[in-house]
Length: 153
Image 1 (tube, rainbow, N blue to C red):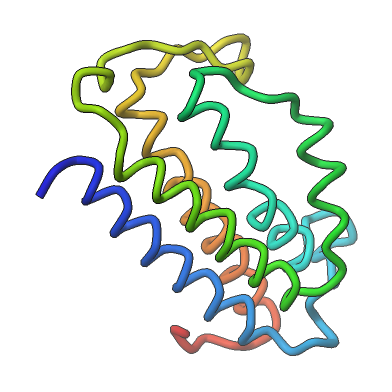
Image 2 (image 1 turned 90 degrees about the vertical axis):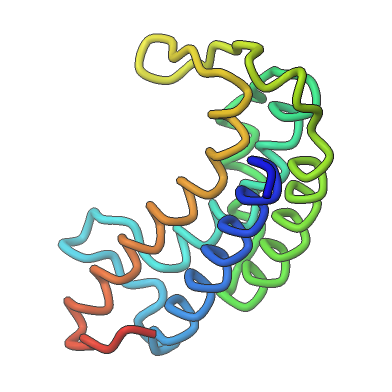
């Protein structure tokens, strides 16, 4: 199995896990912000819905698009179900790009505008979508626990 195949497989599995957990949160709690300031399930799913489109230019061209544009497009999704549909499409397109990424470019480096500038290899970049999905899965699982749901969905 190639790195690209592994990343596609783990990214798709993480999306499935995330969707299952988000859909398990009752509709009346999907917009709830724990503590009044933490992000809701809907907010996190909005980011996930738009994330494939954000990662595509990074994989295709080695450039990170603007964060503000990403946040704006994410807010266009008004329900978790809309987010799920959009996430499956955008992450699917991203996985297609990851699967066809050439081995000879895996060592190329790109600097991202996070944390004062973060330099990663393209091999690392190809795994960012998976990392992001797992990050949001943990946040949604924490919300489930706060709502009294300890089941692993």
